[in-house]
Amino acid sequence: MTADGSDGASDGGASIATNQALERGLSVLSALGAQRASLGLVEISRLVGLSKSTCHRYMATLLALGFVEQDADTRRYALGPQALQLGFAALSSLELSKVAAKPLQALADETGHTANMAVLDGADIVYIERRRPARAALRIELNLQVGARLPAYCTSMGKVLLAHRDPTVVRPILDRTDLVRRGPKTVTAREQLTTVLAAVAAGGLAVNDEELAPGLRSIAAPVRDRSGQVVAAVNLSVHLGAWNASMETVVSRLEGPLRRTAAEISSRLGHLNITKGSDR
Image (cartoon, rainbow, N blue to C red):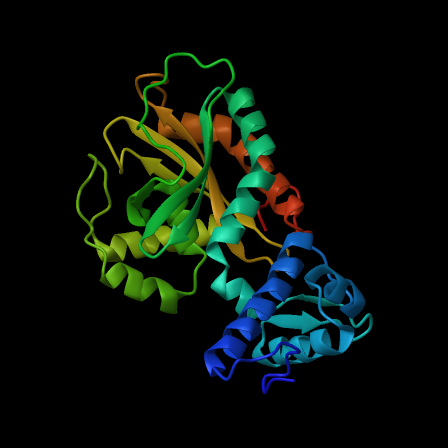
């Protein structure tokens, strides 16, 4: 038995045992994340291939650190706030993309506009899903692909994601962001951007009216996980060359389908506290 409570043999190097402990701990967290449901100890031990007693020691450690939480009545485990905060970015992005693919395609087909999903990575957003309408007319838009990065401050999805972060997290992000003008209506004043983010947090919808590039517009809404945390944003992008309508008209026609899709994806992620007409 190693000092960390694992069953594996050690060749005398402490790093071997430490790596094994890390691998096992991450396998437990991955199992909980992949199931998207609470699990009992026996289920977890079977999924990760550990004995019940060994698995219990890992769960006790993860519970004490806040990476898992346990229901007092059922004794079942779920991912805790620490795990959700860290995000397991790669795993989460893959899962989000898988869950969102069909709803986003349906949204694109219904509206005739490209539907996107992104997550926040520092001061940037990263596209993790992008769906074009099946019957697409002439598309005039940025040449973006999954994995593309854009500044959060001048994008609709970025504003949604910043607006729903703790201000103590957002302030240092804005401190290191150069609010340069990228489009004719880019918000370049820190105070104005802060006001915009507050409005987005209150209303649950963000717009980009030629802030990223000339002629490009978009509207975005948040996607929440089962804890209610905003983990991603979805948007619809529109170009003036394809639809020369006012921003108010764009929002009026696209807000309903966009919010409905964001709510559907959130529901698939386990977010149950969604009321009609609201993203919360």
